Length: 544
Image (cartoon, rainbow, N blue to C red; front, side, top):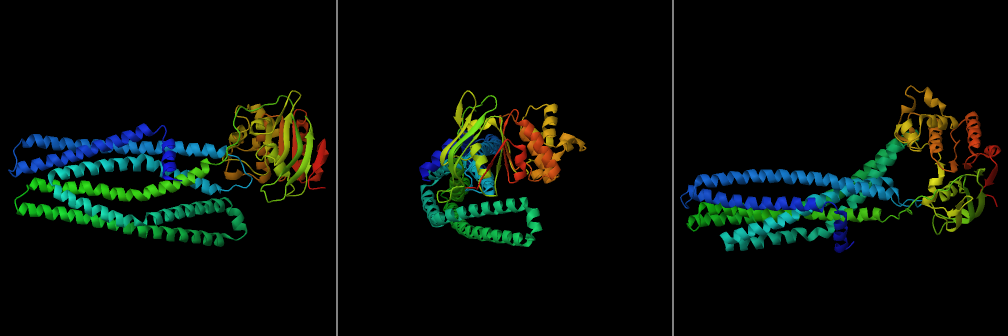
């Protein structure tokens, strides 16, 4: 991204927050003004006390106290605006990115690991929120402080101001010669941190598998290796950062020493007042501190630049078609015409010139060995994937329409395996139909042979752990089937619905599902040919 792209991205993302950011900057600029007024008042108080100026000591003392109170109030206001703006923008950005990722097209083989996506949504979003709500207003305030303090110093002594003007930029020029290297190191660190989070997420999620394979020590060693790499990268960046700050501190020390000796010589020569010396020393701090801060903000801008590049990859993900859902009345059918599909251009087609008409009210079994394209066919029906050639058509007596995300409202989908979310059984079921009645919940559980739920001490309010923890695979699968049955839609897609069930439960479930074909078009994916006896027709994939 160019600098222009960088600024345009920040401008767009700050929409709705610009007034707060401007208010934060305004309070900071007022704080600068009060700080300089404090220096001016303190100079006069000291000159009055030493007899080198005339004036009301009490009036200046009251003005000094007022300056202190104003600085405290402005500091508190700045802190409050900064914190509330940060959390508000952080939440909005996270919400926006979450929504974008959730409606992005499923590509079959995702290019970004979910752990990396989470890392970007959390850490990179925080970097951007910090940049907009704290760093950029602070840079503006720092520039105002630097300009005003330097002008004040020019007013007091143009020669000292000239000396300080040449000392600090030289130090900054030397210290920031490694900015390009710092940017590369920061980007490497963010990428390594994402890989580390992805590793932690995946291994913790599958800890029982890793433990059963007796690979816990190996996983721990891999984590140690990733952490060592991150440590070394941060160590290298820290060394550059320390060098940079040392150069800035050298310039600061040189400037302060120059001002101190300059003031001491003035006192010896009786060319300046003691109050002017104190003003010198305070103004040197007011001039040099902003320059030091500007140097320290450079890493934040580098991190922000990297964060924008990483978040831009997420916002560039292709979005599914959006619009009003296309609902077909009655029992719709699905007609597939000469569909071919492969996940990559150089890969052999998973599905080749496939055609079939799933007529309204039919119950069709799709059978075949693992890897012949059964689940891929399901994803084509769901329009999660789009065919390379051919068409998938939804139709009823009145109209027909090509499969798209907008036709998904016609589908009751029960994916393969355990797909329960954390929460109660009721929470999981209501995902299928949020306004479902108790009778509807009971009926869906009965059809799914999940009546055991009512024998649990808490019934529907029994809690499900992550990935259905607390239930057997078969129990979790039946609850997931009940959830799917609650969803309104004339086409039911069942992907290996009996893979974790014993034979008797499987037979009972299939017989009850067969009854649903009276009011729905049912398509059932299975690798068990015995399932065919419950269906009106069957398709065997993987055969010539």
